[in-house]
Length: 227
Image (cartoon, rainbow, N blue to C red; front, side):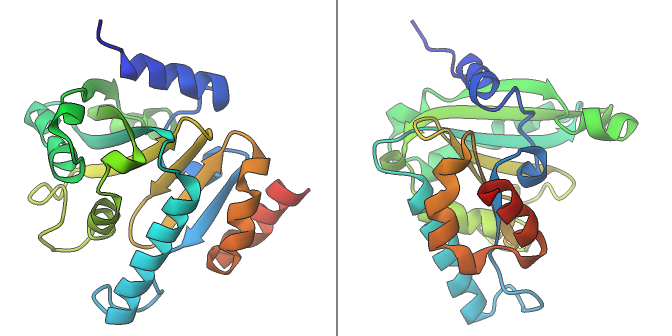
């Protein structure tokens, strides 16, 4: 019998994140989280030092959030107009390219949701939908360094763009650590949100990567985690 991963995700969010609507900006939507600065502000994306920093920070944070055997939901959300149903096949590129085993990819599940932005932005998103793809996997199944690089290129004309050719549509990729009850969201090259069901699970990340915390949100982060 096939496991319904979509239902499992819903149940997980209900039990551990108070039914949080999975959408950006995660840091501002949940009580326990850290927002990291990833790229160098005011520097060209292709600057060698900037690319090195993006790679170092995204991978280091990822490796602190995920262990090899942790159970993971790899989620891809595509935000588009209702009429653009052909896009529902588009994110399979994420899984075909960045998941090592084809047998694992065959477990991919898809659903179409009302736009995840609808409750906040109302009429602006009434004609929009969110195509959600969910795959149950482990860290060792993912070519995560390449995937994080691709996410960081999404706003730039680059061969690694995941939605190349569909500039009007948005994409969000979430990596949910089922084992640790944490969610990693590299929202673009500028920043990364990590939220957790329990604030204690963020302490080591807060200490180890403290210099990378976005200064704009530092006071709020410390208030939430340390008070």
